[in-house]
Picture 1 (cartoon, helix red, strand yellow):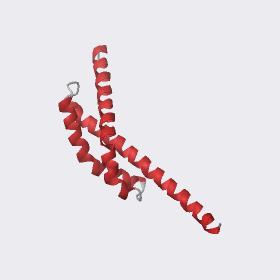
Picture 2 (cartoon, one colour; picture 1 turned 30 degrees about the horizontal axis):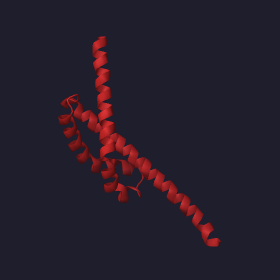
Picture 3 (spheres, rainbow, N blue to C red; picture 1 turned 90 degrees about the vertical axis):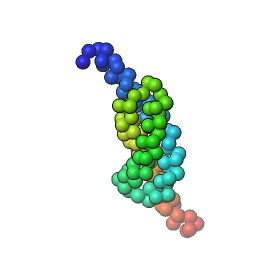
Length: 117
């Protein structure tokens, strides 16, 4: 690969990453609202699958729109954007699940001391 090809490959990878970050930030509130009540009681592995399944359609639709609206993105990038955005959303969701579960455990550990007081 020549240096010019390397430069274009780097630029394209950066564009895809930025698009995936923007897309995941845009759809995150919708995704979390849709899955929150269920996933907070799931294991991390279950939550990953549930979030991925329920976010997939919205991410695919949004990625298609994004590719059509931005001249710098081309159709070949759409699937990469979808995969990266889904992975970011799953990671964000699992982090929220784990944070919620840690908070719940802390509250449960404190509860016996509150009753005794």
